Image 1 (spheres, rainbow, N blue to C red):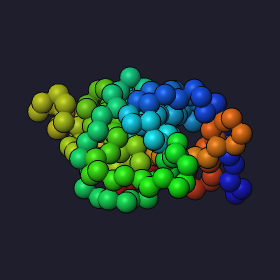
Image 2 (image 1 turned 180 degrees about the vertical axis):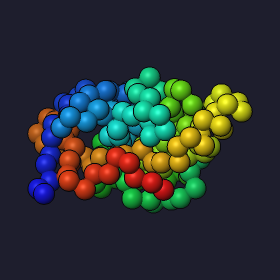
Image 3 (image 1 turned 30 degrees about the horizontal axis):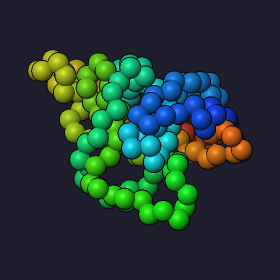
Image 4 (image 1 turned 120 degrees about the vertical axis):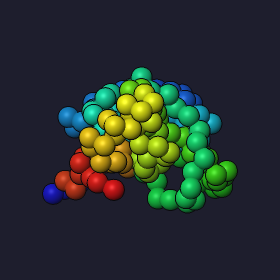
Length: 158
């Protein structure tokens, strides 16, 4: 099927560290400004564990294991400025079980379901560790658009 670009918000709507919940193409999404203001991310607004909305989660910087991993994020800088890779990445943290997801790749960064102590680990065994869906983005005029296509797999397994 044909890819489709859908407007999610104006570029001026997203500030550094801000989480903006929206719906596009029937999918609950979060458009998130990186803490340093250099990137804009778009991820599903549903934790892959139990479906908890992530819009009330925190954005935190966590040490990452892989450098230069593929990203669907949109740079807020012009293309001539180098991307600084300091070994940390912005993550959204599920407000229910405290699982952190990379905003660049959707991968789990740290433990799967670490909260509440003991009970979180038991709850984590109920559903296999999954990554958070991320979406490709672009700017068109004054708007931010995301790419929706038929190959989106919201139940992808690691």
